Image (tube, rainbow, N blue to C red):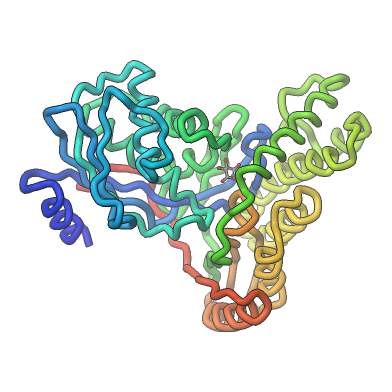
Length: 387
Ligand code: GLA
């Protein structure tokens, strides 16, 4: 595939040397809507992602071409004039990252040509945008020989998403994509950015991602609403408690003090954040002890909490998960990512994968009228130059 992409690059941008970079997508195993609440997450990088082929230019132009949006042709912008423009489509992501690097004082004097190809299903909640951001970060580090470490690139990529693209996401996606390691998931404390890797050893089972093929339509506005509800809850709790985030609370502390939160809805949101954080910590312990069954149960509990307390699922995700729960060989199933569409993540015994895909595919089609897609997840390394 790389040979082909290099040929495509030369067709568009002319002959000469080309460098190749890659950034994965991510899937979160447990710890949903906890990152911006100062809690823990447990994502991993996937082996599919976004490829970027690049060559430096002598002038100040940035020229972008995507194999996923060939109809857009080559989009060109000026290194000295980087502003968000809806008409610039996907290139707002790399533009945003370049802008943040420049604003942070990194010396980017001349531009580059870049061809991009991604095999992450678009809008499926597997972080194709964060993948593009980290891809751009490693491209910049490589092309300009920048002295910058991965955590810094993760933060700059998140900043590009927050400040340039205007999506108020937490740090989970960029962290998983930057810091991912093959066959391991990352337990990240989003309060301190301390992290440890945990081997994902599932014995005779695999991770199956099921795509509802409903785009996360409502996600952005509801996402900001949930953040606000949690921030309000935190402020009310802080009237009595000395805490910095909802992630500081144990389940017992929350139960003792929850009446401080005035609105019942806010209380439910905070409850999810607190319980989900504790569930995530427990889940990783269970996985490390080889207790996959309990890990799966905690995934199921995570979904129920996201459905009933956090209310970010919706009919398609709930149907996909309910069907999984009644299928033989399923150890755990939940929605993953922001919600309102996108994917579920499932742990399924290897011998049942074929029937899982067939049965759920049929039933989902009958109930929802859409064709689902299924992927066996393989956990890969983080963003890097491919040699
Ligand atoms: C999106 C955001 C992440 C995280 C998840 C929910 O993927 O980008 O920061 O908040 O939703 O867990």
